Structure formats: C-alpha cells, structure tokens
Length: 568
Ligand code: ADP
Ligand code: MG
Image 1 (cartoon, rainbow, N blue to C red):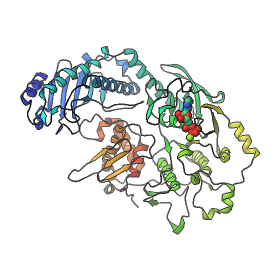
Image 2 (tube, rainbow, N blue to C red; image 1 turned 120 degrees about the vertical axis):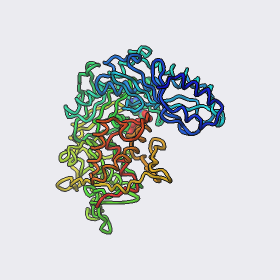
Image 3 (cartoon, rainbow, N blue to C red; image 1 turned 135 degrees about the vertical axis):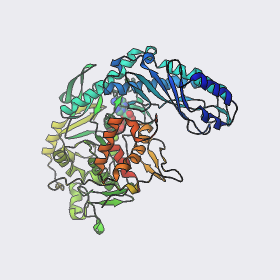
Image 4 (cartoon, helix red, strand yellow; image 1 turned 90 degrees about the vertical axis):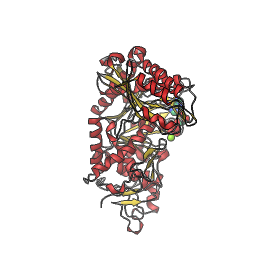
C-alpha cells in the first residue's frame, strides 16, 4: 500500500495542472494513525465533492467496548462521531479559499434525531468515517498547496478530535445511554400496550417552524402528565422515568385553539426516532410503525382499495382498485390510510389541521339532507373503532371541532394552556347526556386491505444516458429518472439522507419486483437485507450519506411515483 508521503508527492507533482489530474490520487494511503481511502475524485471544483474514507484502528481510536455495545449504543455512537467530526471539520476548514464549493472537508450533518447513518461505522477493530473532500482549485487549475494542507494537516487534526481520548467522555456516554434508554422505553411501551409516551419535563415546542431545536426554556412550558395517565418506567441507565402513557386504542387530543394540540401530536410523530440529549423530546416515544396521515389533494393513486371509506362514486368508478391522477382531499386521505395499513402501520396520527373535513365527520343534519346513497364517503368516525378492533391499529387524533368523536374514543386528553388533562370520564358523560342523532355508516366490518403487486417496468430510474439517475432534491423531493416524487405529504421524513436512502431503496427493490411480490413483501425483503448487511447494501460503493428509513415511508414514496403501475 502507498503511504501518505506518496500522496503528498503526487499532490506536489500535479500542482497547477488541470483539474482532471486530481484523478490520479484515487487509491489508498497509510498514514500514522489511520488509513486514507480516496474512492471517488470529483470532475471539477463545482461538482459534488470527492469521497474519501478514513479508517482508524481501535488501537488509536480507543473506544471502550461499552460505548458501542448493543445496537442502540452503536448507532448512537456513530451518530455522535459524525456530529463531532462535522463540527471539527467546519471549524478547521472554514477559511480555506478555493473555486466553486471546494476547499471544505465535510461529513453528513445530523439534526435533532439520532439516526443510523452510513457516515460512520465502528466495531472492536476499527472506526471508519466517510468524508467529503472538496479538492481545491484556482479556477480549474489544481491548488496543490491547499490540497496538501487539507489532506496532510487539516484532515488528521479533525480525525484526532474524534479519538476517544480527545472527546468529552461524559458527553459520549450521555449520548449512547440516552439512545439506549429511549429504545428500551419503546420496547416497554409495546409490552404495556401503550402506543406513545411523553415524559414529565419534556419540551415539545420548537424554536420555529423552520428551526427544529427546542423553544427556549424561558418560553416553553414543560410537559406535565395528568395523574390518571401517569406511568413510571425504569430505564437501563437513567433510573425511573415518569410520564404520560397513551394507551392503544382511539385517543383524542382536544382543547381550544392555540393550546398546544398540534405541538403534542408533532412531538409524537417524531417519537418514532430517538433524539439527542438536550432536545427536549429524548423521552417522547412513539411506536416505531406509527404513521402520520393527512389529506394530500392532487396526489396520484394507483389501484388502492379505498372502499372501506369511499364507495358508490358517480359513474360507477371502481373504489376497490381506485386510481386517480389528481385525488381530492378525502380520497387522498383515504388512500393514505389504506396504503399505510398495507405497509404495516401500527397506529395512525391525524391532525384536524391537515385533514379533509368531509373525511373526518358527517353530522346528523348533513345525513338528513344528503342521503347515504348519495354520499360516497364513509367518514373516519365510523371506521376508527373497527380499525382498532379488527386490525389492532390505534389512532391518535387531534380534534378540537367535533364532540361526535367522544363516542368512539377510549381516551380523551384535553390540552389547556399546554397542560394535558385526562377528560375521558367527562367526555363519556357528555356523550351519554347528548345522544348522537347521527347514524353510524361504517357497516359490520372495516373491510379488507388489499395487497398490491407493483410492476417493475413502471419504475424507470434512467435519465438520458444514465441507467440510474436518482437523487434527493431537498428533504421532500426525489428525482427518480425523469420524474420527481413529491414527498410533501410525508411529515415524518426528517433528514435528506433518508430521502436519498428512500430513492435508492426504490431502485434496489426493482430486483424483487420480478418475483411478483406485494408491497408488504417487498418492504420486508428490504428491511431484512438492511438488517443483515447494513444500509450500504441498497447502493453500490460506500456512500456516507444514507440514513435509516422506515418501510412505511419507502412505501409512501413508491405510492407517490406517478409512473407506478400495479398488476391487475
Ligand atoms: P393548537 O394545535 O392547539 O391550535 P399548537 O400546538 O399549534 O396549538 O400551538 C400553538 C402555539 O403554542 C405554537 O406556536 C407553539 O409553538 C406554542 N406552544 C405549544 N406548546 C407549547 C408549550 N408547551 N410551551 C410554550 N409554547 C407552546
Ligand atoms: Mg392545531
């Protein structure tokens, strides 16, 4: 193997040459405490930066086994290393000057969630970091001086900063123990028949709609569980934790406008992932398969069986295999629910703010004016209980506008100036006092969930002369071949590296589609493969910019691919 000195000589030799001469530095180089792999060299200073990896043997990295023992800690430590590397790289390379976006060393940049990432790996032998390196230039001429400084001086300093002995060990342990506790708590909820948990003292509101950090302590009112719903659990590291347990079944979050209902639901949406210490939502935990549902008019639908909610459409349109290029609010919300169930959702999270009114409720007077046989929609209120009793799927519903739902709720939480109260009894009394005049329209059973088989030919990731051209464009769009997949309806995506991983997964899944598998079977294959071989398996090379994904979100993207066709 070459040494880092060989690389230095090459950089001296190609100094001031055309940018393409950088290609010659591809390869691997041994340095004092790490090995450097230059896997991909960018074509010009304006292109996506070059990809390199640094592998540090544990002899030098020095991570004690208990910092990454078990899956929860391992993922959290990899997340922690990525954060510290990112910070050090930012500080150390901030003043480099180069053409284009070059001159920087970087790594994937995590937000408030702790996600499994391909940016950092650790085992008992070594640590591997997957790094981006913007190779510097004057115009299109190689700046060999700065390249040498970046690779020979700055990179080792950044790597040095993430050796265990140079990290704050208290912070390391806090990070991995918090994640381990959160995962353990998620497991306990499942055993205790709870779908969600919000710890006493949790900070739910965020700094702003575009800033996911916690609202400042002077403004935020910490969460305090109501007595009746308070539960206590014993965490592996953090001792006793008290909070509000949300039982399985149908839960309403009610309360006046601006009293914190949506903020609570949003925290629960994010509770499918773990959070960093200091986030405020470290112990806001939701079942992993809980899915946010909203209306999403304009989306495409391909042969989805929305008939539990919608039937008897005008002109005899088939709702058992319903397709539309431009769904309405109610049909899109119905399809979103059916597709989430098809993909294995355990719970639905719904906010009236983003729902179609005619999908949620149909009152007595409207039933009288518009007869059932003239109204294709069976409102959610008539299906929400069946969903739980027949499929075991819980619902948490924010609803300030209709007390009709009291009849179908197991638990009613009222938010009052950001403080939750358990008003289940009261709601039930009111329901008995004012009997509903509306008649139930849900029928005997929820109805079947059909399992669809996607046709591989309908997924075409090619564009121009590229066989695969798939990439995220921001958080909520995937460029998939010649098409853009619009993910604005997917509220639980938190990171562009997830968006990238979802795009890659769709390409990856094509191989299994030739076996005529259903959407759920495809997702199971994907999850098995990732579990066995790591997230890297979905794409060739060793990319450092993938983050963990849920099958339900992959399905959501597949369902929004406008070219998708389902076998008939
Ligand atoms: P609702 O859905 O009941 O109308 P929201 O959840 O949208 O209310 O909250 C309204 C406002 O109150 C938001 O700006 C939110 O940031 C703020 N807020 C929510 N919870 C808290 C809290 N615990 N402490 C302080 N402010 C909060
Ligand atoms: Mg709201």
